[in-house]
Image 1 (cartoon, rainbow, N blue to C red):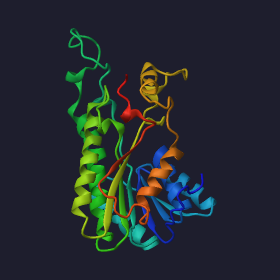
Image 2 (image 1 turned 60 degrees about the vertical axis):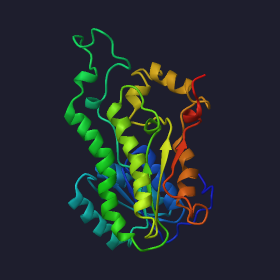
Image 3 (image 1 turned 90 degrees about the vertical axis):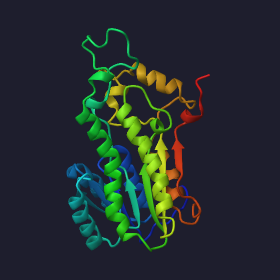
Length: 282
């Protein structure tokens, strides 16, 4: 897909966490096509490397790094590697995140009898699973920001872009921890925007609607490839009547990173959702 906004990121160093995933690998490719030197960070090094190789094969500049966003010492080591390879970070995309089955209920609604039934209700959620989800999403954004924003302070034109979600606006059924964690990301985005407003860093977020990825495949599709009942509900509540495509996040990404077009925009969470957040269901 072409750079729809003609955002020129030539000479910029962009760091993308969670870059081995569907959406963040697409972000990495978009940044590279706009001229940025892209560092793809992921716990799954091989996945990140495969996407970095795709970028370089297209003529872009990219390198993969193995990184655990929950380990500050590892993040600091990676930051030094990136600085040595490319220079100081100008753009940070905090894309690492996810859910965990231990923090997900089996049913949308609690019913009398569920306490004794062989179903995982709210009362059966495991604290370590809930803690993992909160840590991965919130601390997995906070720690890389602490590390890479140090390279940004006092330099004009730097950007941090966080990845929120539709469930930050209204919690989705079955996934209370993930919904709460993404709500924290939206709040944290606003906090960071204020905190860094005097030192040349703009901080914004995008809130994707529903995209079919490996992470949510089991919730959206049956084993035989047919849509689940949840998919039916999602599409019925999305006025455009379909899932989004990763490329459709490109415009919002490039707009918020464009220091001319979005120079006075900081602290916003931009929904990219096919109208989901606007629809009341009636």
